[in-house]
Image 1 (cartoon, rainbow, N blue to C red):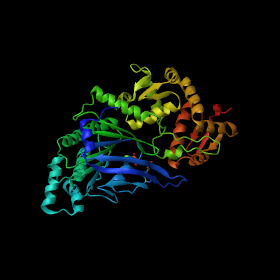
Image 2: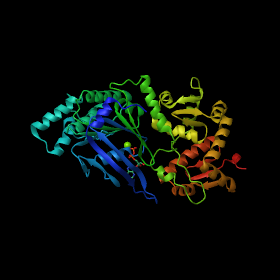
Image 3: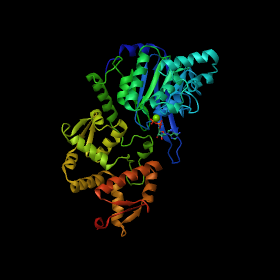
Image 4: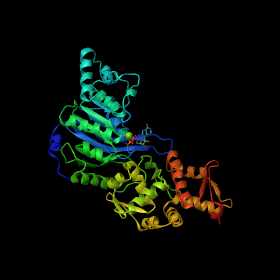
Length: 451
Ligand code: ADP
Ligand code: MG
C-alpha cells in the first residue's frame, strides 16, 4: 500500500517486545459448537511502536488483549514475552481498561499506587513514582480526590497513571477513549501522543485496541485490522504520517477511506463472533437462518433518504456518511449490511450505493414503500418467508414463535435467535406481512391480510 515510514523501519530493527504465535481461543457454549473467537493469530510488537488493533465489536479484541496481559490462557498457541511463554500477569505489561476500573473507595493517589503495592515498592520510592505518574498525565492537584468527584476524562487519566506508574515495557489499552465524549477523548489522545513523541512515557511500546478508524490512524504507527468470525489479522498496515497528524489532510482522509474499504470487503451481516455458529450450514434441507443485527426500519429509511438526497445522489463514501449521520462504525455497518441483504443498497470499496430498488423506495409514498419492503423481505430473508408461509397455511393464521426460536437455536445462540426475531418482527410489521403478539409469543396475520 505505502512504503514503510522511517520510524517503522527503525522499529523493525528494534527488539521484539511481545510475540503472539498461533494464538487461538474458543469459549465453550451450551450449544453443540464451541464459540471460536480467535483463530491462529500471529504478530509481534517491537519496541518503539504504537500498534493499533482495529476491529468490530465482538471480533475478539478484548479476548486477545487479556491473553497478552496474561489474564487468560489461550486454548492453543502462545504469547512469548522475554523469551518465555506468558503464564499469568507480568510486571512489565500494564493494561488500561475502557471502563477505567478505578476503586471508588480509594483516592486518586491510592488508585495510582496500586500497581506499586502489588510489586512491593514502598516508602519514598513509591511516593516519588506516584507523584511522577500523576504529574506526567496531568492529574497534579487531584491526588486526594475521589474517583466519583472526577469527570470521565480525569478518571481515565487515573487509569493511565496507574498503568504507567509501574513503568511497564508494554502498555495495552482496550478502547481507552470510547467511554469518553468526543472532545475529552480528543484531548486525552493528543496528550498521550504528545508524551509519546517527546519520549516522556515510561513505556517501550503500546497496543491500542479500538473500533474507531480515525482514532487508529491518529495514534498508531501500524494498524492491524482484525476480521471477525473468528478473529484473525486480516491486514497489517503501516501508517505513513508523522505526529502530530491532521485529520483534515487529504492524505489522512484517503488513508481512512482505504481502511473503510478494507473493512467492507466481504462483510458479514453480523459482526459478532457468535455468528461463527450462525453461518454453519444446516443439513436438514431448510435454509440456514442468518442472524440479523438489531436494525430498525426507521434507521434504514433515514439512511436511504440521506443517501438519496443531494449532494450524495445515491452514493456516499462511508466515513463521510458516518459523520453526516453522526453514527459510529459499529452502527453504520449493520445498517449498511441490512440494506445490502435486502438489496436496497450495495457496499463497494468503502462506498454505499443505493440500488434501483432503493431509489424507487425513497421516491415512493408510504403504501408503495411497504410493498417494496414486503417484496424485499420475502425474497431475501428466508425466515420471513417461512413464517409467512406457515401463517398462510394455518386456518387460525397464527403460530407460536417458540418453534422458530428453537429451529434457529440449531444454528445460532439463543441471544441471537431472540435478537433476530425481534428485528424480523420490526421489519415485517412495517411491510404489514405479519404481526407479533408479545404476550402470547405468537406470530399472526391481520384480518385483512389473511386470505
Ligand atoms: P471485542 O472486544 O472485539 O468486542 P470480545 O473479545 O469481548 O470482543 O468478545 C469476542 C466474542 O467472545 C464475543 O462473541 C463474546 O460474546 C465472546 N466472549 C467473550 N468473553 C467470553 C467468555 N468469558 N465466555 C464466553 N464467551 C465470551
Ligand atoms: Mg472489547
